[in-house]
Image (cartoon, rainbow, N blue to C red; front, side, top):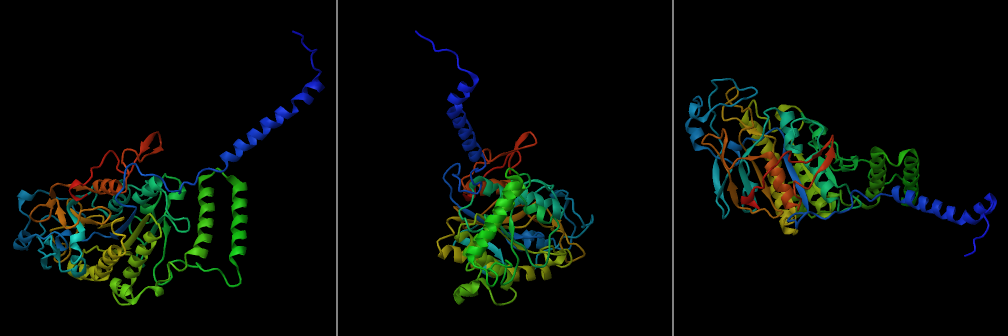
Length: 468
């Protein structure tokens, strides 16, 4: 074998030039692949076959009274004006003092539907839909103050900083719409709640899973239309320039990435979504079904109708809040349970029933899980004679659609509505059931945070098997 003489340095670099170029090109391709990550909002496969694709949470902020709505207690009425018998045990309240007298309910309950479930006369419209509803009468949570209970209802924790259930759902499933937000919150126009916006937040999940907050009234999104004289092509160029400038600053930063996507989403909504938010094109029959255009149902009816339109277009999770601002503007009936609940139910009963009816006739109820409830219930004891205090030991929530078996009531509180005693379900069990209907396993839906894999349901939750 004959070996050629050694190359000079100049000859070596001349011969190797093509190889170095290939290495450089490979590196550039790899860098390009790193700078174009997969879309975190792209639809993802669930862990198992789902029953539901989306969720509408009808949040009755402030705490509706279970014993005046879906959980009749005849014995409480018989004991009206007396102190709570010792055999029912103790309860910690925020304002009710020891020795307070029991307060019977002035509401009339009647059986409805083929199922014969008893519903208060506060909800004559919802009662007509009871065969599609599963009433859970044995819910409970850990805290008796609004902020902590609201955090727990949304995130499974009693402190802020953890992702909301909706952020977890979008993290697990992505979004089915490219021109609309994946997660929408429609607050009450009267103002903020005790836990504030952090209860809806993405917490430690990437910023792309944060909510989009809408306004109220005929124009829930300001500046949705393009400005006069600005064409879609011109607006698109603006968005491309903003995206390029942001990517130059820091393409790897989570907040920058979320901001870039928000500009892209805003542009898509300006070009594709204005018709979605224009309710004037709905049939009068549909508007009347929700109570749009009449008081006191107009505002909540608009938001419930918009919730249906959003899930119809692929939005994954919608929260429609009833109650906002100080105390009595919520379901927070400290002073007068009758005045407060008649007013709040009057605003929401017809829109809620309209939503269930409309989803069903549109063929969307099977794929949309509807959840109704507040952060806790109200006390069997009277506060100042005619009001009810916060109550976390036993209260009612209900679920419908999305594979839920309607026309049944599960669990029970004791004879005066003080404590969940039969099949008690923590709010994390409601979370677990929601994830289950969406095809998500609570043990697989995790995210690394501070050295551990966090999940929505803390250590564990159980599916409410009687209703799925």
